[in-house]
Length: 418
Ligand code: ASP
Image 1 (cartoon, rainbow, N blue to C red):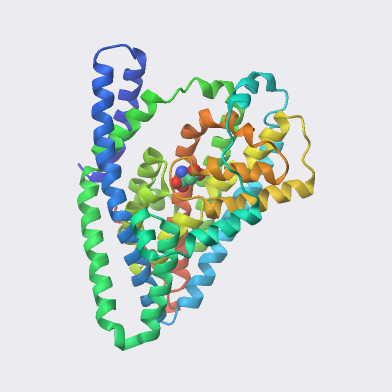
Image 2: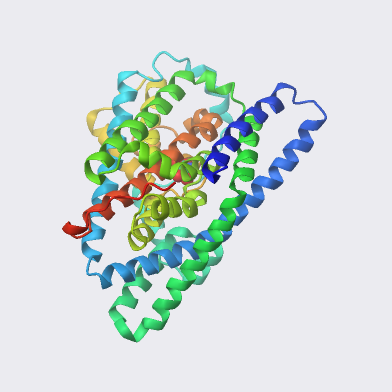
């Protein structure tokens, strides 16, 4: 059976097994099963995390140095940023529009959440300005510290600089360039090994998620959950594929077939970073994106481009405002959008990262940080879908950038092998 099919099957079986565990949580086999599932998922996630930092570093270094040598750095850079901004803006607009359309939160009894809010301890929160300063202070740091702390954003930045330096040095640094390329190839080989374990990892992650999350709380916040999930799915199933079709020349069916391993992993792990090794591999090997383009766009996107997160944060801010009976003015809604965009840029690709940056969005328009307490119980579940869209956006943009940076006589016909 093909690996992609195995992974899909593993996700379905994992969900089914999770439900079985939920039926009778007191049954004697449940703790043992959860323990086993915990071990298997930790091994899978651990292996992905092990590869993450060296992979990001080498892929960006190789990507940038190859871009410059083909004289395309400026062009690739511009198209990438344009795509990131466009898709995130569309996601924000969609989030706000749907929250308005369905009046999420209006008429819900806020007293229901009062206790949660009273007991919620808000962490140190930041204004957008302070957030930005903090962002810079955490990014421009000793690279060795960044490597050992797994500070991915700082690694991305350092890798960009090293890539540019390699290009400037030209022939002088050809050995290091070759070394980076080979190091990157080794990482990709190791990802191939980890992928063989993916069906087990995905099974365990899905089963654990379903067995341990209290899905019943979803019903308390049912309308909001449905609107956010529905809108996120709409963005991922209609808006992004349409853009991909128009600007990337790839049919959505082909895209989903080629990218499903990464998308299922994003769903099961709720982490763009954990899914990165697979999204990089899917983009290169299944979608036919040239390695230096994928190596540049996908890792960068996994940290900076998060449509699902931006959409969620904008809709959630409106939901909280409605719950409180506040009407946000147009200017306040614009502030929400800008802050949500900064927040999605700054959110690391890990589970529930959006919740932390959400505080900043709420505070930007004077909503209480304690309101996070209302969203926290459903966050882990909603995170699954928004992470899929985050990862989808990265792979999709790599296809678009790839297409628009090939020479005219070389317009790609992306490979269909999946
Ligand atoms: N879990 C998301 C991701 O990794 C970030 C978020 O919490 O929105 O892409």
